Image (cartoon, rainbow, N blue to C red):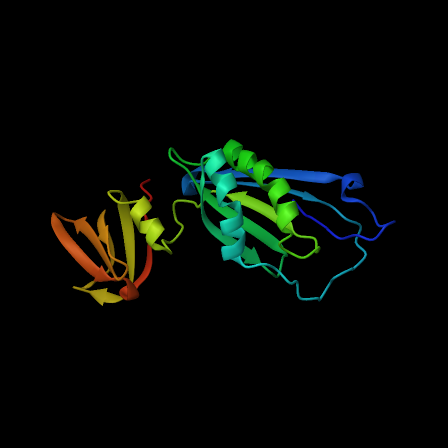
Length: 201
């Protein structure tokens, strides 16, 4: 949802602005995304200006109680400054579909109005599942998918290979451990270009 806070009296109110809802899914990549935003007249206001925003960490911390109430986990908060968009990536036991994205999106509307992450500037809010091909970025990502099949892409060949598939068995913050071809493999995280869930077609 696009928000414009701190308007002067007489400015066009957000309640009077037509809203647009957009939902999309991509089954082959395992993601769903929900976006709702308000359209404003193209006045050119704010174009070319750098938008001041609150940090992703602050937003995630603020919205965590809401996520727990809805039954989801916020796994990443990402700003797209060029498009003035904030995306909340969520995960849940049993997966995330479009309906859950919409439910969480609606749940964070009022709290985000209170937090005002853009200090009154308009922005678009997206709520999205992570997608099966999303790279693991944090320790939580690895722990969440322990025992699942993963893809490991390397910067340089190791034992003659730059790509491995296997079952994730461990992660200590520095080393990725997985079972592949009947053997336990350990690869330094710094050697990995990308680790993600294995997409089986």
